[in-house]
Image 1 (tube, one colour):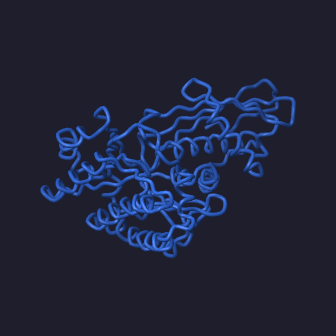
Image 2 (tube, helix red, strand yellow):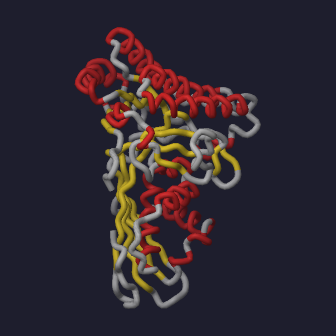
Image 3 (cartoon, one colour):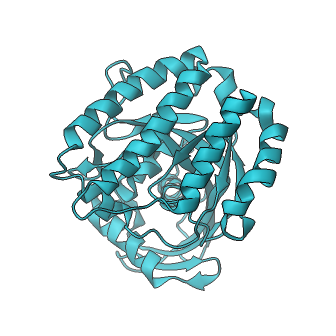
Length: 352
């Protein structure tokens, strides 16, 4: 981390770098209000292999404005550049330190762009981690990054990005039993989680590599006025409290119940919205059925969760890795687009 650069020299180019992972929610966040505030709390595993790498080169210019050029995997990406510029303008009260800087942002993902993995959590949190390093360089501040501030600013860029800045697991959303929890930022749960959950794998079964039929922004807005919305938020709040206890106790059986119920509820909310959306595909259902049969027959505690799309996240402790991998190869890859499966694991503590 480049915290000590001095920027008096107009032509001196400095570089900051951050890597930030995607995350997968167990209790789902669906529905928001105000400025990216969640209508219910959510709890997620932080992944490690599906991540975004972002670097920003910056130098002083001779004006009081900043300029920005954005490259994604070596190519200009006007759509993403526009998204970043809008974010910086909408939240300019936090980014005054960028005035008078030329920025060149380069970003790349460790997973294929078309793999149907939501990348905004990884990409926006990586961007924020870089911007906060620039702030430190400009202010010649050598103290460690404030990860709560990183979570807060990441949330303003993409709600679920708030959860990506902490390893292992995060909680985002005010929750009575966690005193420092907030709708404004996520809090880390690593210290409250039984060691078994720190060994979890997430094998992401790519049923479709198409872009989602409904964007997250539109999906969240469909919760406004949804006849089942209040019941859903209440269930999510209850499941959050229940899951916090389950995580502490290492209660895998109840973890499975909550994870799968939450995944299916998310899709039910979409199916019963106006207009309705069907995000699962036939092969999503084939995988779910196969996973449940496998668990029943083998007593191996593998379970599924889903994002707002057709791909299936298969979650299981490391102790069962070889059996689950064989099961995926023999039974599940046939349902995946081009036999595509991405094997990820929970991000451990103290790995930057």
